[in-house]
Length: 64
Image 1 (tube, helix red, strand yellow):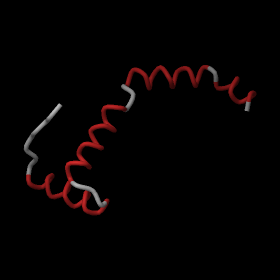
Image 2 (image 1 turned 90 degrees about the vertical axis):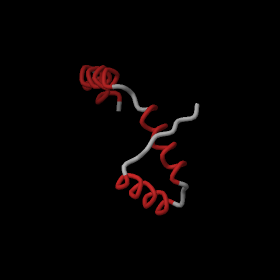
Image 3 (image 1 turned 135 degrees about the horizontal axis):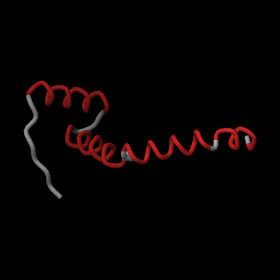
Image 4 (image 1 turned 45 degrees about the vertical axis):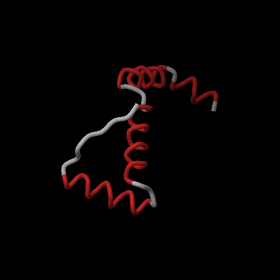
């Protein structure tokens, strides 16, 4: 999928600066940032995981 959008000048400058610092093309940095955002678990998953960890905290402590 190809995506094109306009960044405000300040954001474009910051993207170029950060990409240069990392030795990347701005497009590659934007692509990596978007991939990272989309691969993060959603809030519902994080709440469920936290509840399970809290519920089983004593068991995990004994197994460690």
